[in-house]
Length: 135
Image (cartoon, rainbow, N blue to C red; front, side, top):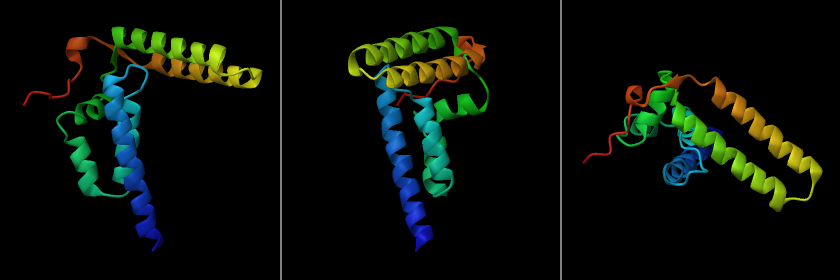
């Protein structure tokens, strides 16, 4: 019974992560790859069928493969990501909270993400695998 519940929870979390990842393709402040990697991790622990669907998906699989194969990010993507990150965190820290501890936490999170993105290898855009969106 617990194994079935665990499997259901993981599939549900994975599916939610896929939805958020797809939204992230179109909304600049939402990450895509992070959610798709989370979905792949959930599916890998719960359903081979869902895992292979995601990895082999012509639109979504490319994001996961690029990360797994260490292709890195284009420099322009890194810059855009960091600009949007700091703009959104800055706006949240200024207008969404009055608590100093929460402002400090937001800045700490943004700093951690900045360090992570800065450490990702910069790749030429032509070298990055692109999702296959052609019919």
